[in-house]
Amino acid sequence: MAVEQEALDAVALSRDEYDLLVARLGREPNDVELGMFGSLWSEHCGYKNSRPLLRRFPSGGDRVLTRVGEENAGAIDIGDGWAVVMKVESHNHP
Image (tube, rainbow, N blue to C red):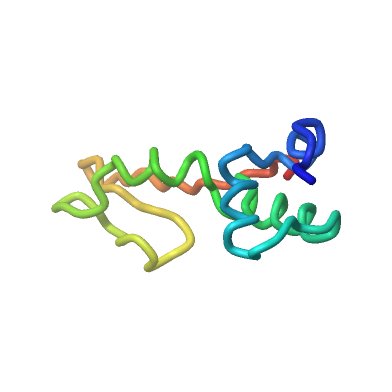
């Protein structure tokens, strides 16, 4: 039996994500699995919406002081001995 859209909305999964989950499991997920994947594939845990956008920004260059994965935040030299430090964090409800 296919899951109702209301159940997908409750765990913030799209229909495409649900279909992918069914394909990977080879069956319909139970309620616990649906909740688990809703959390694991959420913006909070996986940055599913922001990660593709963040990949558009350059991650290297003369002014990059910390490379991707080096630290918990990025630092960019903005000149005159100054740097800008950026960190992305979400606290969205999964």
